Image (spheres, rainbow, N blue to C red):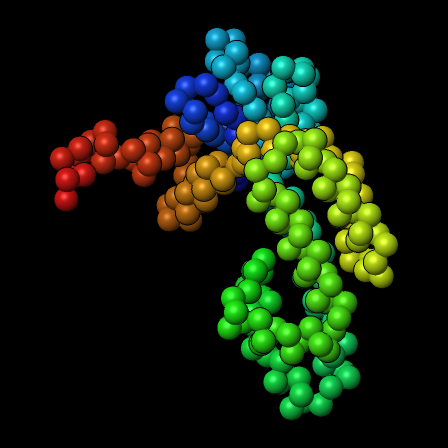
Length: 265
């Protein structure tokens, strides 16, 4: 059964400024499109892209998996920037924040009375939504928890500051300076929850700051991959790649291709 989808790459070409998804499948009993996920396997696959199309590629966006990054560098050299997807970066520092939140809540649960801890539950519910910003009505609610845990308040402040950098329309050079300042501020604080993330931020600083060249991300391909996952669950697996792509065409372009008149309704 054709069951497993793995890592994604998206690339941006000059054709109508659209992003094109490159979705790689492996682990199929019917034979994968890519034999594995090592650097040499991805290089072999990338070289199947026609040269005329390779020349139109302006940026390649992926997560922080080195196998894909190094494969793209080997094929496209320095002609095409490799961009670390900002949402994967956000996921990493939000994970650090979530781990701190869990440890602080565990500490408070032991420290406070059941009544006092229950009073914090509205604030806990807001924090679980992983919001970068709170409304005026929400601020007094979360402030009750932040008074109990200044460390958690500081961590959320640093998280918002980093998100604000990625939301800014600035050059890669300015972004690099701002991120370096952010790292220095976090390092000088008493927080240790971001230590592992900071190592990643320093190691992949170039592809991360390449995001600010054209603000490319993998949003399109992530959404497309979710469609593939939903399709697989709906069909309880598919017997061949051919059937998979037939269903994908129906799901994504079915009305346009087979029933254009329905679009009027």
